[in-house]
Image (tube, rainbow, N blue to C red; front, side, top):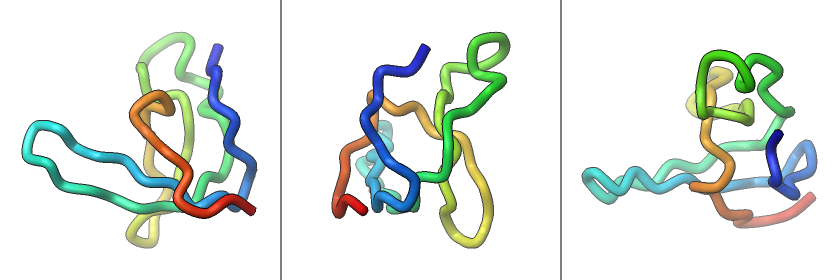
Length: 64
């Protein structure tokens, strides 16, 4: 179960620590399949599409 405190519409940032790239997206909803197949527990709108991110690697940039 996710412990994030994001609300739909929050602008959040994820940092890829492998090469220190940062991505910004809009939080949409929890990832219903994360309990079974992936660590990615949230769905985010980024670069025009829905992507899966790991919530504990994210921070709120601007809350809704």
